[in-house]
Image (tube, rainbow, N blue to C red):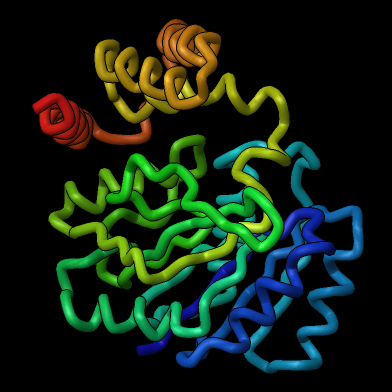
Length: 283
């Protein structure tokens, strides 16, 4: 199967080479890898240039955006710019972070999943983060039906159906909700263990946490689901302030009448899906 990879990269000089090396060592190589150098102020471009000489599969795109590392908007802006350089001759498309190390069978296995079951729209492995020297642990082990945003692979049919990735906080939840709305399945493979070299959120702007509640509002979660999701997040983080921060963002978005990211019909489906998930966990 043919596939493309787009890698948004902002100040990834220290980690990008590990990611690109793991891609070039894949048993099933990508058709092309677009690395989007997004307003980096370090030596990220120099690392990309070194790999341009190593493989004709790798392509560089320099772009200028905000130097604030906000989840959603910055990374998806860069991803979409990279996507513009690619044609439609692919079987699946990959959005990959610039700070991961993939096992060498990663995309061979992803291709096998998509080819074996056309109903699968989004597939991926699991993220592991280093907790001690040479010791890695599963990150966010509670939800094993979710493919993390750092390692998302989409079948062509699914990516087309959901109309690409939304330029907003919560994009890597909304894509899976919309995939299910269009009758696609999410597949996670626990044999694919990906090393994440920088823990999620470590480089984000401090104001990023204010966007979570806004995302819940714009995805049409409604008050009660947003409230339950915020309590769950606060419990996982062992930080009660997270609940109030989220709900503040929710009501601020409601007051400002921020535009919704989904239609009312999609919103009804999302709420029904969320309630089903909540009930299953309670039973």
